Image (tube, rainbow, N blue to C red):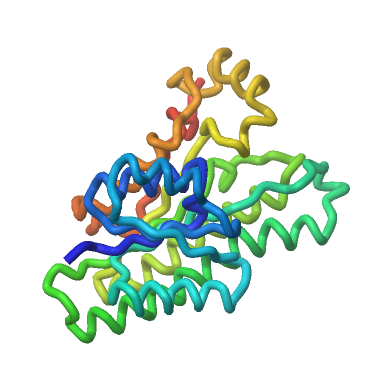
Length: 256
């Protein structure tokens, strides 16, 4: 039976890269995103295979989250993997002395709050499935996509940094709590990745990378992040639950 993977934010960028990699790996992929339409993403995945679907879901909305999980369980009978990738940047970059409460709530609710409650919702379903011994090959896992901004100060988008730091702690908490049920939880931390989100500052980052910001002197690609997700779900890292995989070109290395 096909393993079922849910990828939030799976319509474009890093999420789409992860969806494509999991499809190639043999998963049935359930992409979800806020948008009602996903024609371009579906076209990309159709070049690889047919084992995918798209379900619209605003992860910041409680009812939407529940509908997504209920529909997946009803149609496919299992959830083997949750990848929490959905996220937003501030609509306007503001100094932390000027950040608005609306912007803070928008970013933190979408990035951090939704990740926590998606983990909670799916973890409870995974626990029930394991206790019911629904399949011999049922080895569920959760992967949360955060960012190097989880530990890197960007004072023009403080709410984003806070939201990603919260995802890091969410990963630790669920890795701890779910260890008793043999459900590993991992965090993948992208660095500067070539996506729509970074396109507005592409020239700035390109110059910084060329000047040595990262040991590997190139932009990351969604595939680089996807490869870390594949490593996390391979089964080879299960004893390292809670582990952080840095997909950042070496940015995390402290250098003199």
